[in-house]
Image 1 (tube, rainbow, N blue to C red):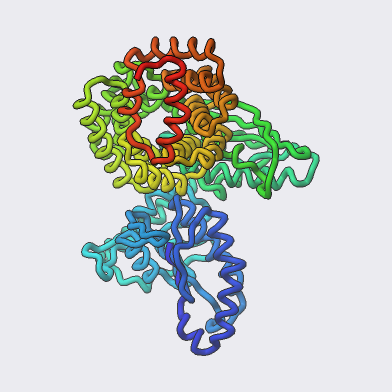
Image 2 (spheres, one colour):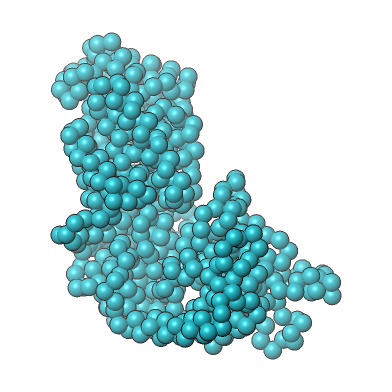
Length: 604
């Protein structure tokens, strides 16, 4: 989104100091709060404008509408030369990231749209128009096609008329003939009427993995309960909007369905989504209890329900752990529900990739992993640019590389995994899950610095991504920074203590504690890991921890289970798998892991 003040130079020439003061006030009271509420990031500003990045086209438009409505109210009654009118352009497209700055054709087109907008108006590209069908309170008008500077082909432009504040479009220099423009205007009116009608009549084409978070209710006796409920609604909507493939209705759109008498299924059908989340908050002292339900909107079936009870801490009214666990759980529940409702006919790329993704956490054998990879391959045959299939196949290949004996095949699998993960993030640089998989693949390939950068990028996009917090912890362990790794690993566990990945996170915690010489704590973490999808790495760490703690009886039992699960196991074999960590991590591994394995009788 690019916003610019119309006539700014003239205003500065007439009253430089006063204009500066007004702009500071508008930023503090109007633009910056609106951007923050919608999850936007101000990339850069000038005296009269700003460039803002959003994770969602709906949030970008909602923010622009909020700003223009507030400015219209402020300008009411003022002389024309005293008004501050923003022109706003919004585009959805690829960008180039340069540190904290962004550039590229996606930004350039937003700038051209801003220039086409009327003072007080908003201009959108076709890509944005296709994403914002759910925004209420506005009418989107087809303003025709326009030739703009440095863009080879004419662009289709849409303008936004706020209810009660129609914006003229006559200033735009139309590329289309007049009779086509008239036809487009008639179609625009028909489309607006259709949008109003579908608000009351549910459609049958609700997008896959589409969801609305209805406003959480307040069951507390304390007044702050409503503050927590409102904040939870905002944060959960934001967190779910950052989940790959999830279509989440803007909070302001869902906000009209508030109150105890609202039927979640009916509200969801009106919003044209497949699923709706409803719930309530009870705040008492230092504890917060949240009741949440997931409803299938076509038939009203309640798919999932749970009560969360967490401690409050810090300055945030809603603990991050609560948001993370809700977002993770809802992501899994929606995908599981989508899997059940797939058609019996020929599956498309989406269906095959979803089936593979849900199957992967439950694989144990090489054959099972190969079956997951086969499903992803089939998906890519149908759609070579299906990002979830590219990322999923990359991960399956990396995991498979750790399970096979043939070194030639292992190297080939890792090369393919790197290529696939690179393609996935190139096609969708805002997909946090693809960056997480990219990090895991690079970790398997022993490219630790690049893996850490990919993990950091993914967490910038989605700080609620529990698996990636764990991945970051593992990378810190391999960098010899086990003490620093523990907070990341603990955050991963707290964000979702019941996820499929919790056993992996406990294994990482055990490794960090073992490298720090905290053997009793390491044993506790390893034992907990073995209760959740145990594998040979859990028993490797447990064997070493018992031996270093001097409990040779339990070390022998753990060693027997380790060799039963992985008959090839030896210290040399582990060295081959784990590559060359940092010098400090290598020293910690020698002093605690390998020393413990030797004491337990593991062969070199």
